[in-house]
Image (cartoon, rainbow, N blue to C red; front, top):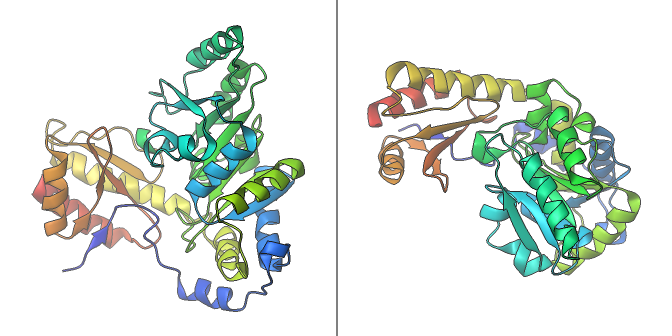
Length: 337
């Protein structure tokens, strides 16, 4: 049976061209700042997102945790969206690693509600424990990959009233393609951003934190404290360089295929059986009566997917899927639900 894996865009395997490019990478000891491929990747990402320096880390979660440790002190309040990756999917790492308080606010539009952000910023200043940071996730995965545009960011910057903003940009590249906006435009008003290479861009691993040179100096220390100091990482960094050069434009194909998948399911199943909200990027959410049973039934038919905490099925399109795979998955999903 041909298995269609829709669990995540992290399941992709490096293409033959990417592998060949990685094998030719020039490497050095990045612990001493001597890996030229890592330095090149950090520079390229920084140029794209509009920051002067960068730091290659092993994963998106490590990127978030290093950023939090570099931008806060233990006990600091940090505002996040109620369904943020920082809150739901990092195993309590923010409390364990940074010792901070996460203050959740409503996020039905895919980003922290500016009015609630403004109120919390004012309230915590009154009690002499000011909010230290506001974290924004772009795209906002639990809302179905909602891309956060520059207008929404501007409203958050205004509500923040000088409080720094950090972007968990795990799928910022998808947001950029979906909105037709340069990544740097989507980062305006933020002090730092972490972008993932192993999701939509289909590199084998890694994220890059970008910010000021002074911030990255601090982040480098925090990365070491978390055991993330790298050595001849240029092989992996080269995968990221290849992905930036070749895979950013093709994200539009993932978005189109997500729309196709949603359309095929909608036309054959009523919303009472499978309710699908609007699809923005490469994530399709499906509300079903019994999500855990549905996941099992789909797996038996050769379609792999995940369940979000709210109980929706999550179907993610990616570089290893073509139109035929999407049509096959849709037919199996319709037969299973």
